[in-house]
Amino acid sequence: MSRFSKSVFMSLAVMIAVSTASADDGLSFKDSPAQQVLAVKVDGSDGYAAAFGTLVGYYLKRNIPVSFPQMSIETGGGSFAAIAFTGNAAEGDGVIVLAVPAAKVATSTHKGPYAGLSQAISRTMAAAQQRGCIPDMARSMRLLHPNSPDNTAATDLITEIQIPVTGC
Image 1: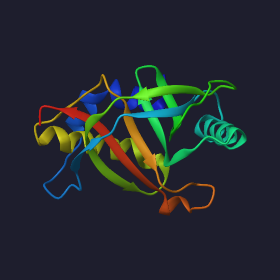
Image 2 (image 1 turned 45 degrees about the vertical axis):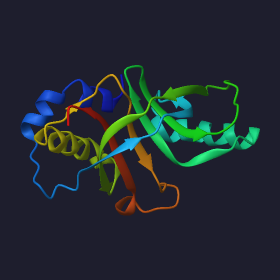
Image 3 (image 1 turned 90 degrees about the vertical axis):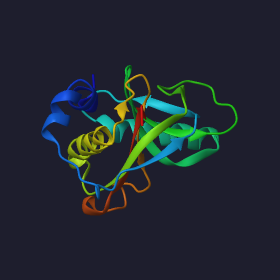
């Protein structure tokens, strides 16, 4: 199980209990569309860097039309580096096709190193719960990455956190 799956989904009650949020917490809500994504499961010591490298090589080599931004997806089945695509794509070379269902999401933006994402996710979940929402663990959490550590300083990395919610 991934770092996010353990620290976010499995320990949700603990994190919400120690997190705080205010009315100006930067939280908003939107409908996130259903998407077909190419995905690589995150494994091993190279983690996301290796998974995104495999993913980019796969769609470039096969000329598959993709829709940015790239994303990280957290599901009950693990953590994945992913990108939406149009048309048809065959699985292979460690790349699978996942159907990510539509969901109402609580969303916030994290600016800074990826090392701070777990805390940002906890704050987003806490803020959503304070507004009467319940994180929908049956759906996939999405982390959208409009820029990349390949060409962006860690302090300038942007991540849009999207946590599926119900009841609000």
